[in-house]
Image (cartoon, rainbow, N blue to C red; front, side, top):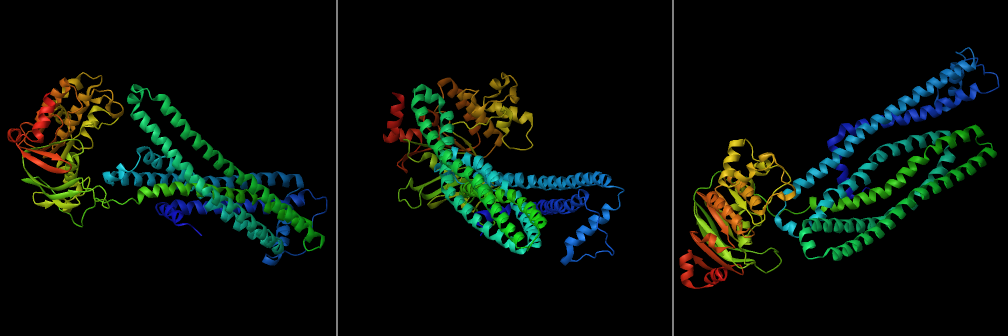
Length: 609
């Protein structure tokens, strides 16, 4: 019985129907020529090396299913009589053997050729589907997952599926066909002996299947342990500066060694069980072969079959040993591959809570205002803990709104809701009177640019980091954006200027330089709504001045939501919202709030100390 996971995985074959057909067809030719070579060469060799006189047939022997053996001998004798002597016949037989085996192996290669397209194509499809799924999942999904584990599922687990399941597709497509045709030949040679073989093979199958099932749970444990190791490596590389500064290298090394030792023990047990399957299956098959030899010999002694037929039978049956071994080994690999596919499936089946309605509104322009109407939000719909509570305010086009408050007060979450990184639990957010839940996601996010506290850059050139997927962008437009962002001067001093690679996360640049590149990216995007999420909080005074000037240029003629850590940067905001524990407790201009002598005044006072 095929498991649902295997059915789902094999459904990817529908994209490779032609390759599957060609693989099956050429495997069939390969098997037929294998049988042809065994079945046709033996009678010729028997006649060539026989010291008896050639049999003289007084009349042609007609082909009939009941006398196929006599017909084969008649044809072999007829062909042999075409040659002047046996040595000439042997030369031509050798040439014929080479030709038959050449064709057989050509057919085998063509079958494998098409299988490689199937295997690698399905791996590509899986990775594409995974990557697209990850890009479309809400941020809440990633807050509950380890980055290293997600990387493992997209790389190691996909590779395990390719090796464990797709790697045995060739076996699945070829060996059962091989076994069926060879068993058919064995049935033709002797039915009683073949029924005995089938009984013995059935017993072997039950034993091998039982071993394969015991490996399934251990394979899952080993994959999960490997995921934790990859996650730890990723965290170590990302935090190497902090680890070194705090002198925690030995502590983390010991922790890693413990995880690695546990993984090693799991893998040793897995490999020992897996490696048992091959010698065990071979031993069991040899036991069957011995039993067949005993039972066949018994039939020879009873004169039910001849010794020649028994030898032919044993030759054909011996050819079945390798296919049976491959199938028994494949059982373990499939189980292990399906465990990895189950881990992949958890991502593919992850629910995307940020969805679009049928026929959503396409937001072409931002015209007049953003409205937060009595919104509340919880990260967990089953948890009554609200991160934001009953918040309402409007932002008119071209205005600057600042969000201030202590850490954890909900400032960044409030901005994330506008981008629909999350959906409000209660209330609504509207742009130009349109509920953003009814707006096409791509068109909504096209209206918004974000500059965050941590500059997000990629291991690519300066130019590609600024353009970041935009089309029809000229060098002049890029340079102009960088001048507005105060980035052109330092870029011009780089070795290859705009074509300079900036390393992983832009680590070859200073913090201020990285931030100015992200500002240049936002300038080039030219979105009417701008979100600045503490964009200068981690910079030194000199860098902050350059970045703040760039931000001032960026905010010109834009509607801005500024999440501020340094309150000196938002004194000219049109309205300041002071947040505490998910609620707006004060609102107004800088001067109005100072006059109220509330939380805002205290925050300003703390920064002036």
